[in-house]
Image (cartoon, rainbow, N blue to C red; front, side):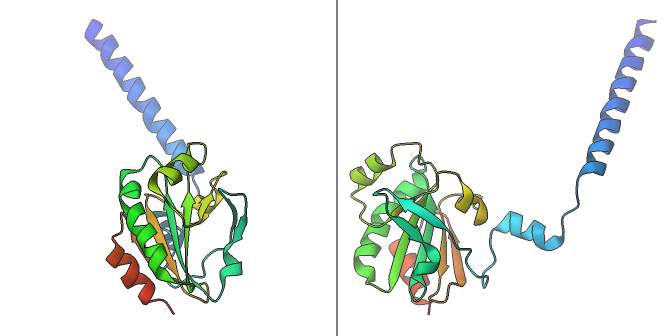
Length: 178
């Protein structure tokens, strides 16, 4: 008798789970292939870089579209991220060598933490932008950090690098920009 009751409970539970899952699948909207690719891989190489406007640590406003005519290295990072910390000294070195036609924009995705302390400790002099409401992070479909987009002087994404970059990577990828 007890075995029949347990079997009935298990059967009812399995049927309930199956029905709920079937109903959830019916209410989901199917995505197109291009949307799925964009969501999984970020923005496409060759696409126009979405414009944004963010404040720096010093309170200045930076708008991507105002940098047309310059090559842009757009880096997404966080203070707690070990690979981000590892690439910062080489980004600083690259910034000092880069000259006026290359702009480094480092978009911080955790501005609620002590970003200024991190900048001071690591002696960073390139612009740090604060993505306080995560809009730019979401627009650029950042799935892991650090992620860096290389944008040419016409505002087109020419390359993307995920992970900690070395100085040679920065030099090579910006040299390919026009």
